[in-house]
Length: 279
Image 1 (cartoon, rainbow, N blue to C red):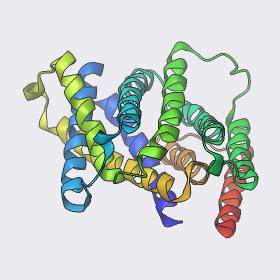
Image 2: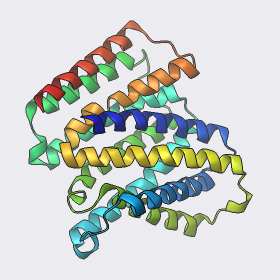
Image 3: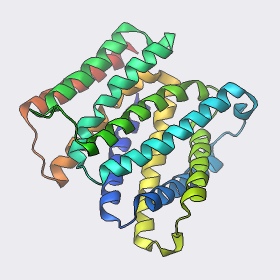
């Protein structure tokens, strides 16, 4: 199960760097989105050219065209929400909200697909996500602030995307699909926002390229895992992502862990170990 575990670790690093890049660059939201997707498309296109398989009936079947356009729309919207939320909230805040995503995704996958309704897998995934969420939920934080709501909306749309992408992955290489997705999103953003790319400093382009490498690698691995092992199994392994974010917060932002948090890490790793034995 190297693929989903590696995906979770790299995805956590990509999110941490994404938050850092948004906070440290002086780019406005629209310009940041345009440059971010341009670098994702550039990195993805190079990788797809070397390793991708372009033999696909994606654009010959209306069903898959419709699903593709939906995930493109979701990618546009939730990335906008992420940037809005990350400009106001800390990585620690997102770590908490990100724990909602496995719950959303597992429930949606079980509703949508018969092969995702294996009770033990669903139970392990929901157990790990729920324990982590409960132990990280700070007291009295019942009502989300406005900035938090942007992140909640983003997480819900990301969960929907992971479910809807599953049938498309049966007919197309994950890296090719990701390249087509980011390419179309880039065209849409450039058409509507028309950013002045020449004015962006080289050091900020460098940070975007680094994030592009992390982002493309993590998303392709996540989609590969969904295609090979299913949505529920992938989501259980992706619970390692908030652990990675917690480690980043500990070392770089001096966030302290509680005993409950450590216990939740143990529960998640035990659930993953049990799932690995069952597969």
